[in-house]
Length: 360
Image 1 (spheres, rainbow, N blue to C red):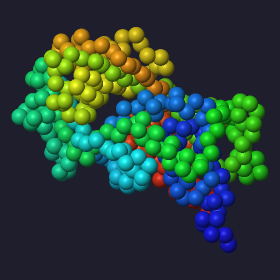
Image 2 (cartoon, helix red, strand yellow):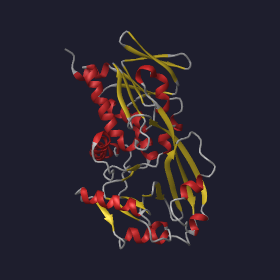
Image 3 (cartoon, rainbow, N blue to C red):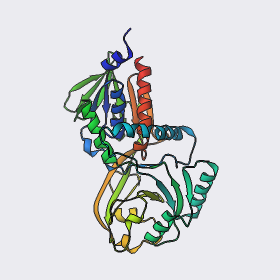
Image 4 (cartoon, rainbow, N blue to C red):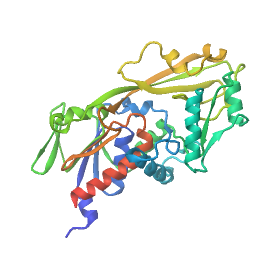
């Protein structure tokens, strides 16, 4: 009987899609000894490159069910993967802590209840005399911002993570094909992926990680998978540093759904994922800066130095994400919506277990 490692080394797995989920699956599977090929027609254009990288794990308020199980597993796995990936980029890290804030009293009461009901020493309500709250209220010229802090949640720079994963995949000599797959089919216990140029690629398994386009490659009449586009947008603002001290603010925080990341003395990033569209609206500035009753002058006069967006997929009629064994040798991992980076370790672990069960 052949050894497990020998079977792994002979098995060829095609991953369609080269975002965070696709690359993390390639990382996990290559470490197990599989031959892996990643296929994507436009690697630099996927939504992972538009991600801000906030990891909202411990502060997730629904602490039951599948979504929490995935978060909990990823929370445990991330420190291990950071240590591993630092061999390829010693600067890669998770910046902590993370603050979830609101100007809404009802939402704040829910945060208080959540903290009270979950005896987690890493989660705390921020009192009015907290230096974080004082500095944020001073910067935004308000007295209404309240919230909680998670000492274990934070942010990983998405571009840095992707570059580090690319370095690892190059080191492992993972095959990468810049092609578009238009059809997949199974024949004689093998899977065939057909490119737009009519090239057939044979593999033992296929993993679909190509967001909205995953649904185009499967028989939706039998699988009934529906995905809708969700637009994530971000702007980089240059502000007058004589009016505000951005260095006094936390490194990353969220106010009523808007993610805010100060990156220098006079620059900050504001981002959000909440539009069901494939094209950004013209009033991006207004939408992303509309998280206070009254904007401070420095925010009103801020100039956009950069803006970008990414299109994610969200499942219709079922929870996010879709992680499913569709049939023998065909797995789908998509519809991560807001949490692709956070859930990547749990996703890749699940995929690896599914493949082991299938092959052996």
